Length: 634
Image 1: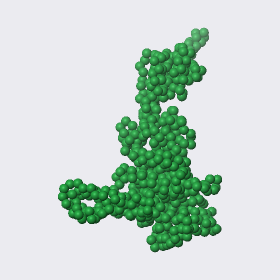
Image 2: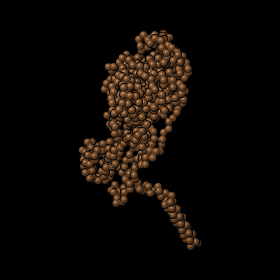
Image 3: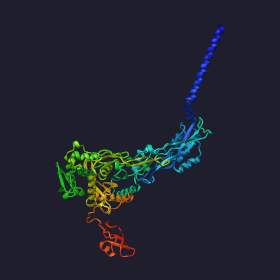
Image 4: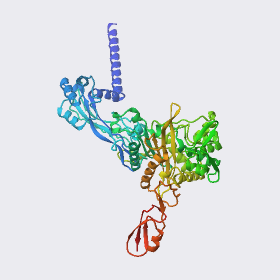
């Protein structure tokens, strides 16, 4: 019985040990096979450390590949507190070099953490400061690569490009809208240390950073430089509160230039107030558009066939009474009897009131909505406004009248440019955009290409053709004469909008504007100029804004390779204008015949012979009265 009990106990103990061993083997197998990666990572985290290596943000180019935003390689200070022996000395030396507080620096070097960044004093260090820190040779003090955003043209295109913060994150503009693409993935230098932070003699591992995607904009740098130059001149000459220029390809929605004042230098954005750096006026600013809005009323009237520009007439006595409200024409005493084409040329408010009345509230407001007013255009920038329109159900006859000539409503510059582009391009409303393509950083392979987005068809091609004709006539014969370019076809409309404050119109305070396009028969560019309260000048858009638009369009001639034309409307000159005359084609004539046909011009000759074989400018071109015509004889 005794032995039997002993044998039973031995067998039981043996089985117990065997079960324990089986459980241990199973557990070891599970750890080695199923939990290996997890436990290996946990173990590695105890003795491995990483020094960050910053990735570059993607570069930003203009449409021709010129760099608008790039990166500078800088260094940043990183501390490994466990490796720092004399913390007081290190804190003292670093605080002296960085110009920071000793107590703050001592807190950094004493912190119970594996890696400590010194922020912000130790970020994006200059070469001189980095060299001084490197010369100290302290253990636990490291300098690591970091990327700093750099804008080679300074304040140029500042509100479009935007700016980035100290951590290379986009905070406004393209930098913010496309931040997820521009931001790369940081790399690291991995090294190994013991529990006290002392480095082990093991090989380091370098993880290469992945740079962000490069972006190409629709902006043309040459046009942008012209816009910036003109705005600088405006600010010097008129000292306005604000000024802006916006240019777009009407056939695609591509933004060719966008600039405003005041602006800022994104390299030093900290030096400016938040309103200046975060308000992109061409998409944010809302105001009563004034007479440039008459283009919308004109297009709606032509599409609905409520008026014949050439046959229907209107008598302007200087004002019109609408339900007890008197609406004045800008010309005292009015323009008298006019065709509606002359109403457009003269920018006659009472005439446009009659156009609005012919359309009616619902029809006019329907077209205003179709042209994109009262809603965001969808441009790929942050901070776009929607503007304010009357509710058609609550509009009376006075609201209908004032809306017809651009008063009482609120719009943005980008809405106006988008709408006018639709009027002159054949009737198609496109979504404006700035990013043309994206490229892979190493190979520059295109990984995204933007296609124009057609939002809707608003008017017919025939209506668009009539509107273009009327607006070309405005520049040749009407209020937009200061935008006329000899030998080129330009269309456009002036605007003089009285500003509103606290529900009342301000005395002598206007936003002067001009919106123009060329060539008038087949537009390739639409330009909008607005100047807010210029000082010391006659308050007319044709006086202030039209000449600026002309200068931008003249730049566009060479940038877009726009061909000259002799088929445009001849300008109707007044006594203040410099007169241009159309010259005859004298090629093939004798010298005597050429002299007879070119009376009033200064002639210069080259070559031998008595027959004209070449002339410059060519025949039928417009030349300044008394200007030079060069003839080659043979």
